[in-house]
Length: 181
Image (cartoon, rainbow, N blue to C red; front, side, top):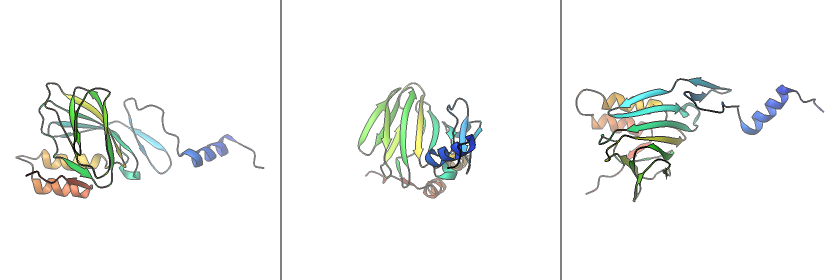
């Protein structure tokens, strides 16, 4: 029988549960390489009036992604869409956010959440008087690069180029909802 050492116990633990991750997010985000998690400062991406603060970018290893989304009152928001490969959960932290999944629409308040299964049409808006801030979890993650790519289209001079925006969405498996008659 092989004697147990701290190293052999760690190898057995990793085989059972995967690499050790830090216990708290704090002011850091975590990305996982093939062996260990590394910490980086959260990345903030401005998409028009929206702010996306990436905490965990899981796109490189098809893992879970987590980001904070700030939606100012009355701001322009993405059109309703579905994800071909991702499931999404929205948990409201501050304010009130109107969120729709398929035919259900709710005004989410702090502590409320909604889940969007893969393929379900969903969208959000903030017709209220204060900013809304939500924690978004995507599994698997589309990654911060998606929001950088969208920001390049939306933040360009003039109105966003719809053809370019649809091309970015398609690259990441987002499908615009059919327009209602």
